[in-house]
Length: 241
Image (cartoon, rainbow, N blue to C red; front, side, top):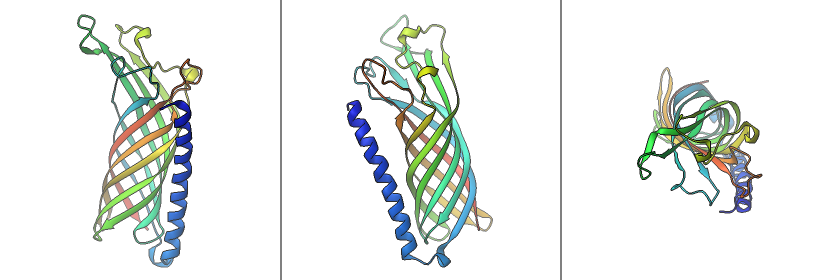
């Protein structure tokens, strides 16, 4: 996919998601009485975050660049407002660790990757998703889904490079002069919630795709984008009022 095409599709995704969220919210308020279904929930969640990047530069292949998964943590707060019985809007504020790891060939056996020869990028974000939320199921056990967009700001970063790795081997070196400190993307998730007298306990899995490049690559001979991808698995607790 060429850079211009990706930018075009990215813009259409922005508009489409915003229209879906606004339309669904308006529909919910029109269908049911807010007096019956207005309900607030507030809580927190935390768990594991797995992330990697997808490059759009067709000149770099995975045969040359072995980009792997980076492991981190995530935690934050959740506020939910139900506009009707089974539908609502949810806003979160999360600390999320993202990044990627690149491994290189063994010096004695070029056909084998050596895990001790690596270049690792750790990116720490404050992420704020705005999501449409819906659920189905019995009163005490619910299956829920959410979909929406998120904005994020980079709080800090660091890189690790094995002593045996030459800088020229690195496919995507993280440079402060090229970094984008703001991120924007789409997020979807699903999970199970169990309501009790003391609150709601939930387990959730989410997938996030950034639509903004981690690094500004427009100055490169072949313009490209490095898109953050992340999967989170969290446990949460919420109270309703």
